[in-house]
Image 1 (cartoon, rainbow over the protein chains, first blue to last red):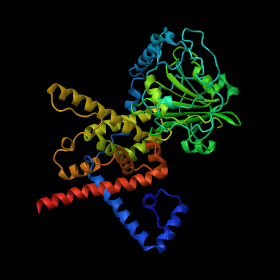
Image 2: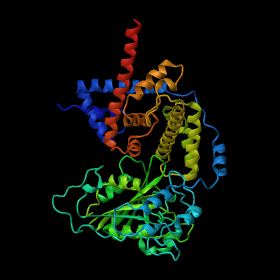
Image 3: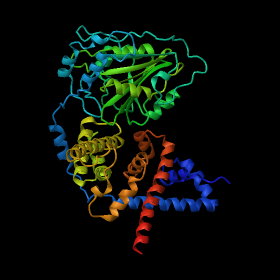
Image 4: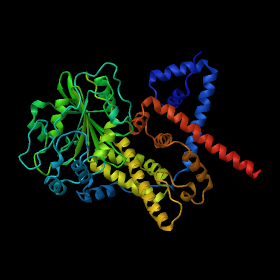
Amino acid sequence: MRHIPEEELHAYLDQALSRSQCVEIERHLASCDTCRATRDNLAALRDRTTALLAVLAPPAVFPPDFDELRRRAAAQPAHRRPHWGWWAASILAAIGLGWTAHTWQDQDTATPSRVASARPAADTVRGDTATTRIPLGESPAPDTAAPRRVAATPRRSTPAPKPGVSRPSRGDSLPGRPAALTTEVAVAPLVLPDSSTSDATAPQQDDAGFAGQDQDRGLWLLFSVSAAEEESGAPLARVQGLPVVQVKVQRLSPHEKIVAVDQQLASGEVIRTIEGPADRVTDLLSSQGRTPADAAADTYMAMRHGNRMVAVTGRVPVDSLRALLNRLPLPSPDH
Amino acid sequence: MTEDLESLYRTTYSAVVRFLYRKVWDADRAQDLAQEVFLRAMTHQPEKPRAWVFAVAANLARDEARAAVRRKRHLTLLKSDAGVLPGSPPPADDMVEHDEKMAKVQRALDLLSPRDREVLLLWDAGLSYPEIAQQTGLAVGAVGTTLARARRRLVEAHDREESRDHAAHS
C-alpha cells in the first residue's frame, strides 16, 4: 500500500491542501496505522518547532497607535535621495560593453544632468509611481533626450533556432546562447508603465492619462502570478528567487500579449521583465514620457529569439541587468 | 484600503517584529524596522499587503545586516582583528547575552540553510504556503518539502546540543 509522503503530511497538517486532498488523506489515515503514526510524529515535530521558535521572541510588543503611524506617513517628505545608479550605468554604457557594434557612446548627452535633477526620487518597492507614465505608442519627444536605442544588428542569423538547440540552463554565461539570438543593450530614457494602485480584481485602465492617449492600444490588466501562468499555459518570464510585486498583461490581439513582471531585488529596487513580440517590446522600451519630469532614466537589456523578445529594465547598473537577463529563460518562439 | 491596513497592522505587527527580531537580534531595532515597514505600506498601498509586508521586512533586515557587517568590518580593519565574512550571520555569542536557552535555539536555527530558515520563519510568522512560495520563489509544492526538512533539522540540531550538554553535566 502506498503511504503518504512526509511533505504531503506536513502540508496537510499546515492546512495547505485542498478539501478533496484532505478527504483523500483522511480516508487513507483511517485505515493505515503506519501513516497515522507518521502523522502523529510529524505533528509533534511541528509543535516542537513552534515551541522552539517561540523562545526566540523579544519582550512582548504592543503595536503603537495606528493613527500615530498615519500621521507619520503623512508627514514624510515626498522625495528621498536620488539614486546614483543611473550615473554608473551611463558611464558603463559610455565605456562600452562590446555587446553590439553600434554607437551609443554618445549616450552621455545632456540627459544625465537633466534626469538627475528632474527625476522623482524612487522609493524601494515601487518606483515613485505618481508621475511615471508610458504611452504604448511611439511618440519621440522633441527634446534632447531622444532615446538612442541600439539598432539590432544580428550578429548571427535570426531564422528559427536550429533543431536540437537546447535552452541554456539558468546561470549559463551568455556565450553559450544559441546562434539565433541577438542581444541589444541600450541606455535610453525609459519610462516604466505606471504601476499604480489599480484594483487587481477588475480590468482597469492603468491611469486615465495613459488610456486617454492610446485607447486603441489596449489596457494593462493586473494579474496574479498563478492566474497569468494559467492563462498563458506557460511559466512567466521572471527571475526565480525574487518576490513578485506585480504582474501586468496587455492583450495586443486575441493571440498576442505582452507581459510585464515587476520583482523586487534585495536592494529594494524594482526591476521589470517584459516579454512579448519583439516589435512590441521594442516599442515599449523606446517610448518616452510626456514631460522631462516624467522621464526616468532606466536602463534595459533585451534578448531576442526569433520574433520574441524578453527584456529586463530597472534602475540598476547594466552589469546587474545582464546578470538578471541571464537568469531568464529564452523567449520561446511560438508562444 | 487603509482599513485593511489597519487591521493587518493590528493582527500582524507582533509577527513582523518577531520575524525581524530573528534577523537583527535586537528588540528595539526590530520594532523600529517594523514601524518602517508599515509606514511604507501606507505609502505604497500594496495589493497583497500581508506578503508585501514580510517581503519588505526581509529586505530591510538584510540591508541592516549588511550595514552592520560593513561597520564591523570597518572597525575590525581599524583594530586589525580577524575580519568578518560578508553575508555570514553574526556569531551566536554576540547576539543574545544571557539567555542560554535562547542561544541554543538560535544556534540550531543558524545551522539551517538560508532558504530553509527563511521558509521556516515565514511560516512561523503566519504566511500561507502560496505566500511563502511567492516570496521565496519556490513552487507551492516545494514549500511542504522545505518545511518538512527545516523542522526536522531544527529539532534535531537543538536536541543534539541538549543531549551533549546533558552528557557533559552528568
